[in-house]
Length: 219
Image 1 (cartoon, one colour):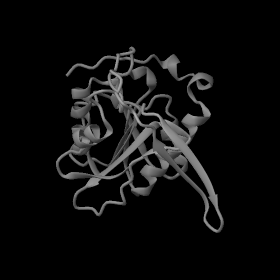
Image 2: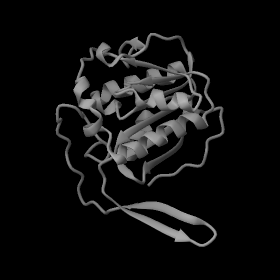
Image 3: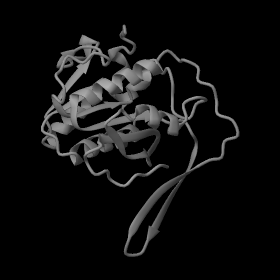
């Protein structure tokens, strides 16, 4: 499968790219990977490289791979043909990246991620379904945050915008279908959720079937 550079380096200019909401999503990236207690992490599609830098502050060793050498990845390669041995890394992650591939290629990429991961796979994907966010402050408990999806009579068709080939919530890409398609044999969904402060980002965490899964959530 041939992949081509899609996003120029200038796209990641700090003032334009790093919104406050995206910072919140970045915190979840580091937190989810850290919880899996990895020694070696592979990030596919590093973008501006912030995850690797913040992960290092959390004591995580991260290597990056991308098809665009201008982004300065540690390895230049395709997500659908990773140049690593089976289980070469403890955790493999891809944040807001897989939607930049045609859907069938994204499924090929997740299979490659599962092949080179030994302990966990962490991805975030765009989810366009509108939700009502709620924040409740309870005595002795503190803040409780949750979202409720708004009723939708008919999902929208997706139109390629030059970057995203598909998005969760568009016609044919329901969350349940994407999760099922992304669940590689031998792996299971540990949890999925949308970032409260950046609801456009949905996280999915997969672990090998031999591991006990954390409680699942779907909002």
